Length: 161
Figure 1: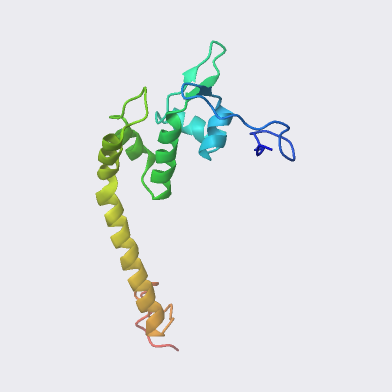
Figure 2: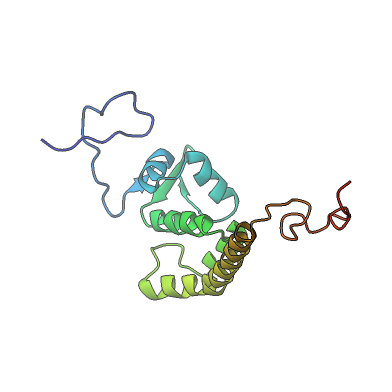
């Protein structure tokens, strides 16, 4: 018996029919695109407002997503998870083809743009980790003396009364 998946907006329990695999040129509704990408419908609308996605529109003005946009959505979500601002994502994605999924070389070039930013974030996180370990390791745990937690406390140098 084929596995049954839940469709967006379905009630409790599995749907009575399996969710069919879309054909390569099939257009997805916003709900289907959200379901397949793991994003919310609101997120997809937000990405469209920011110019990150350009779904097609039906004669009734309903959004339809070509399957190749699922890759863009995945990239947007991944970039967002690692802290790349959506404005930077939009700028970088402007050079990608709009009518098809980017090829491997195009993806590599795109992600290469963020390599330096990711390396800088890693260095900052490592520095924060080292400061944290040093602070906990010193044993003082004093808000009055700690130059990391309380660097501008002018009362710290004064002796306790």
